[in-house]
Image 1: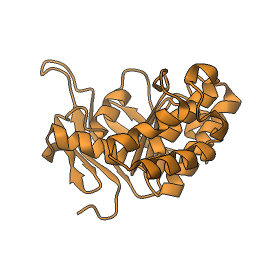
Image 2: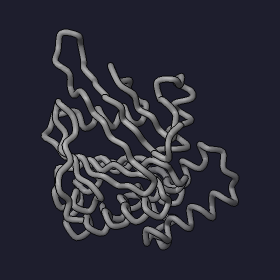
Image 3: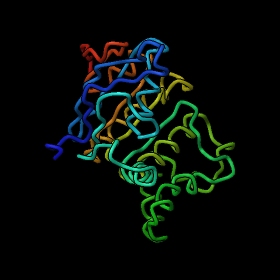
Amino acid sequence: MNNGAVLRLDNLAKRYGHDRPPVFTGLNLELAPGEYVAIMGESGVGKSTLLNLLAGLDQPDAGRVVLEGVDLAALDDDELTLLRRRTVGFVFQAFHVLPYLSAAQNVSLPLELLGVKRAERAARVAEMLETVGLSFAADRFPRALSGGEVQRIAIARALVHRPRLVLADEPTGNLDPRTAARTLSLLRDRIKTNAGAGILITHSRAAADTADRIYTMDALGLAQRATGA
């Protein structure tokens, strides 16, 4: 039973090698529908490792990741892959759009993987491109677009299947401040609109201030900080 939480971390711990100290231990977090939080921390504290655990790409050494009431440890590889496709949206600093596909084709990929029919795919892709202000670029390839436009394609792709959990890893690290602000506003608004939950990994306090809550991460867990949002 998930008690309405989209995501819950229970005393999560991870280490690499029994003779090495834990990357982190005692991580606890709960996100309700519509909640959007930022996690900050020094390089090397395990923020990327945490995202891998949340997406079921890695397994914790202790504790649980519960997504939509499902303990990820109870799923096999095929079930985890399907859960990621249906439930998780990723936004990365390096964009990771496919250069040989148009904007519309990039955004359509998650829907194709889920077997959504062509007519519905086309409608949802058109809606998302309009939402991110890129209807004019549907048939353009990434090389013909600015960095900010490519990042908006990446956001549209991450959100087109209406994921319950959005994981954003330094999504504005390669953008100028004005474009970064617009990108973060768009990301927050769509998470709220979809009533999902979002986690923003960032080194930028300005970016973190767009979240509902800010946490500082270290080897001993997550500590909540004040937010300016």
